[in-house]
Image 1: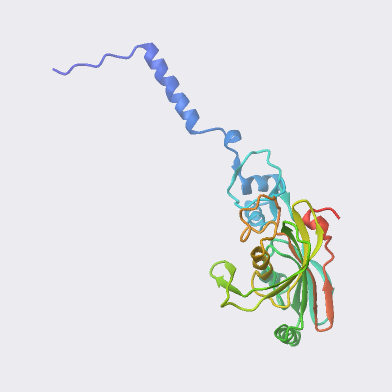
Image 2 (image 1 turned 60 degrees about the vertical axis):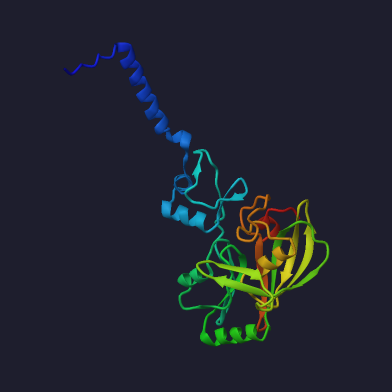
Length: 279
């Protein structure tokens, strides 16, 4: 004969109900406790679309307390304050043949062709590198520029903020090879292509040095990998300087000047302000 279970008394029933309520509250924390995804929070604060906010983060133009935000879906407290680099590209020079721009951080070189669809890029800069970039306004100028690069008749000078103190000029001549999959990455390779970088210290700080870099050659990530090879990687380099303890809102690399075919184009950016260092 089947025995009936004794009904729970009111005390036990109340205790079970309380336990269930606690489990529900534990399982689903309040929004203020768990925070919000970075791109949604940025969109709300800046009154922009979530797609625009995600693009800003992915392009490397958003930082928190001086450190670049790398992942758009990072959960952050609701009171997080963002810093956004919003400086647009500025025209340095233009005539019938050539257009020189001051490219800002976070802009892909090829994306400039959407703004200038009838022009052709003469040179390219990494997305995270700012500074002088050139576009040809006709095919004749583009071909002249190509020949100038081939004949090594182009002069380029960059500013970089590097880790450690450098007191003397150094000429780096180390061959470079590049793997170009979904994202390019270079390394020093005795079987690679010739590459030369001339690094000159300009100003030293507590843990860093502001340097100028001239590059007679132009390999992918040349300056970044050359500086890493002498144990002075660039501040803010998330590819070649991942373990750095120094905070950075951007890659501290800027193309300051480019000369070719009788032209000289120089960036108008205040490098001390751009890199966040004192003069």
